[in-house]
Image 1: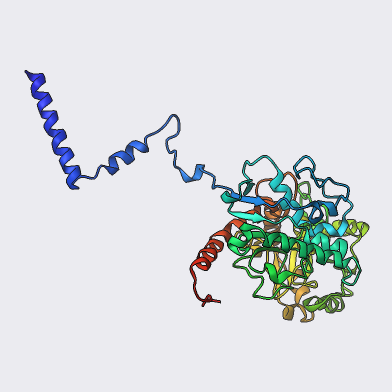
Image 2 (image 1 turned 30 degrees about the vertical axis):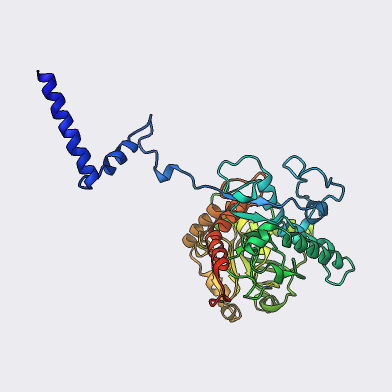
Length: 431
């Protein structure tokens, strides 16, 4: 009797609940949401964003003929076997100053590395699944190898490589689909890709700065500013009890003083800083031996001077960073790598060109620089220096991974441009 009564009550409750849900007076979603968020095993929050890594950038890398990349390093390498982590030649230790423009090599190497743990970009072999397309043309090495003096007969080989590459890309369905906007092209040497730059001005360019590029070609909203690859050895101050006192030179500079554009300031600074016992300012060219001397000089100095070169930036800045020598940056138009994530004012000192040319201004400021402030900036510098290391295999938060993350930040704007371009029937009124 009681059992029958209970069954009837349950039936009517179920009937009323079903009717309420159907009519919209009861929302079952919160209940099912709670069910879905119940603990599973030992995890109390399976959707906790702090425990879920963002998806890496999916990159399709073109399998270009070897003449566009590693054949410049090893002309005897096979053009038949696919480039892999097993047959990729190491970057030569004797490359000297060429190393500063080797970003193109390290980006390519990172995509060949099999371990995808904590990587910002992974290689995909299905172009339909790719977020971006990497063009492994060693344009900087091509210039350094074939056309460094601009008038050599070999310069024609550099130009023909660019012509052949553009023919290859323009025949690609994926280049045609986006107009090259989602293609990543490294050109960190100021003269890299100099013959056909205008044909890639829609792509994501990896540049060291914007000194040689017109605004319609290169700009911050689509391109990525890369550090130069440092050529001095890394610094290590951990065993020094008082690095401020251990670094006996106040201000250090060693490099070419004959430069173009803003770099002409170097000759003027040489005259202003001459005759000061706490300043080392020396004219020098980059050779293997001179790089070793510069390594020791930077490691033993409190501040390292970074005036503009032929373009607003130069390798010297990144040599100073890895030497844990506080950079003194003099350039009115410099753009810095990873600046959306890194605050350079926490470990660098900035002066305008006008301030730098005022007699005594820089030295008076640096000589009065508080030790406590210097030590804080020095500690900050040590904490960020790993972001400027290029290495293989790549490591978490190193320069290669930082660059791929910067590329990833550009992709939403790329997709916006591609989608708008597909539906526009008139010229883009925003350009």
